[in-house]
Amino acid sequence: MARGLVLETGHAQGGRGRPRRLLQTAPERVRTVAVQLSSHDVVGEVRDFAGVILWERREEHGIGPGRPQDFVSILAAMTNAAMDHAASVPRAWITDPVILLPALVTDDSTVAAALGLGLRRTDLHGPLTEAMKHSCTPVFMNYGRLGSLAEYAATPSDRRPRAMAYIMEADGVSGGIVVDGEVYRGAHGLAGECGHITVNMNGPACGCGARGCLDLYLRLPAIMASAGIELGSGQGQVLALDELIDKLEAGDERAHTALTDAGTALAGAIATMSNFTDLDLVVLGGTLPRLYQWLEPHVDALISARAQMVPEFNPEVVLAKYGSEGPLRGAWLQARNLILDNPADVSRL
Image: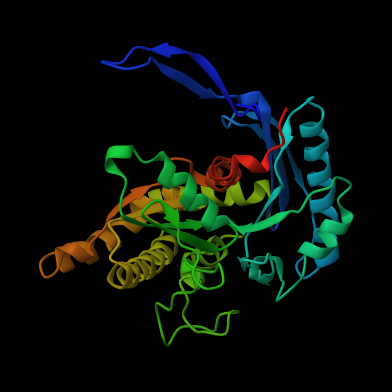
């Protein structure tokens, strides 16, 4: 209360003893900042403590792969704009900005690899921190980890799983694992990177160094190439996805072959993850919900076959509540949870 994070809203009389004081969080006290980079655009947003979006901006950047300094420049411009808006509210506590990347990101914010951006191990964090005009420390995180946090929080409290996996397709296949309500990060912050589960040892070479990774079959560019559709970028990707669905509904053979390969790969990855981690829920996000009616038969075939032997290794598979917006919501939750875990970090009013 001294830091303005909660407000007293009244009293409630219990059965005995002093009346209970009713508290609620103060939405206006906190501003969270998130910036999401993809291969074709950058999105910035500011939310209050309750998660309401107060400011947002989306811009296509046209930056080609393998140009780290250009990515730093576009991230800095968007992050500075978001921080400017957050700082316009008197007495609001502004959290460190969360930078969402389609990349393998370690606990120290090192980009270990970002194949969709054409980057190998790269330090984007240092240059971005130097380019910031506000005093803050950007926090780099992977799409999948943040998406898993959002989807877990969206699950009704009486149905929350003990172990949940999140798989999404957005500039590549990524994901996260939530165990007992906490995002499991692993030894280096890379846990849940399901896009590079090997689903075909004799498959094509992957940029990660392995062969036959899930990303090579389930990633949208791979599906489009197999279906004979030009993907394009930005809004062109949305139109290409619409074209793919039209072809699937029309019974196009190449489109159905592409989805058969993708569905078989997805089923194999779910089997590996569920056997190894004993999952009870798998959530599919990003572009996968739009394609799931063609992916589902392959996943169902696997689960039905295995249920006859060991039904415990057959998680429920559901579609994400937030779709492609999950990671940004997860960024707000990440910032909010850090404050609630240690409110003493916030200055007194």
